[in-house]
Image: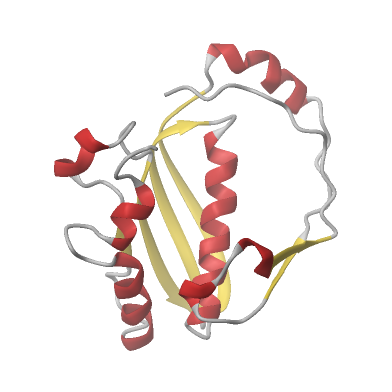
Length: 169
């Protein structure tokens, strides 16, 4: 249990459901500048296994495309950042579908970015690998809050073998 971190803050930030508010805000005021989600809740920091790393995301619409900018205050470049890129990109696809928008871009702003010394060997392995062709995402259209993992399919996902590493907390 990681405590009152991301999902808790998104769905109950001092009584506010930020995800529901975000969806309603995008639908009602697509040109608004307040389409935000925050995971940084100072009174709850003591109830988290570690303070939120990806702390603020802002969504914006241009040419009927929904884009996301994420600010990440602490960035484990080997383990955390790749997962965060995938997660927020998926979230952007889901929100765009829910709000009848196309998908725009993902912008990732990094604060304190680092590679832990105990990951140096794994990073060396990763750097020797050649990139592969990107997969495409396919998923059903349904209510945003009813999705489950089986609703998402990666098409033509070609990947390298996993590289194991321990997470630092």
